[in-house]
Length: 110
Picture 1 (tube, rainbow, N blue to C red):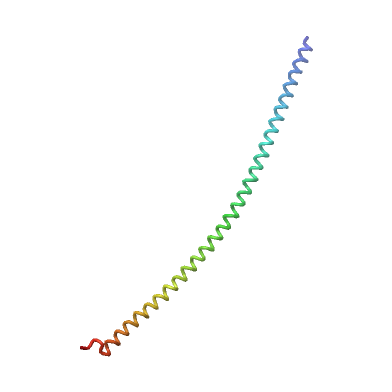
Picture 2: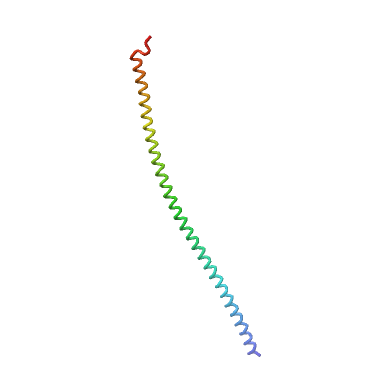
């Protein structure tokens, strides 16, 4: 009877070990699937990050070009303002000279 009890105990132990092995295999399979899924998500995030970096670089270049254009426009406007100021001085000077000439020729004499 002791031998049959030992065999039964060994059989139960063997069943337990086989169930543990099956559980571990399922757990490992699930873990492997989760790891594969996480790897795929990470790859997608890497692709999105790379696309974002390319987009940001393009935006930075566009911004740089726009700032250069704005600086060029400011210089042009400054040049136009300078030209307009010179023209205004010439016009005012011409009016003053015309008035002085009018007075010298006796324009206000009674």
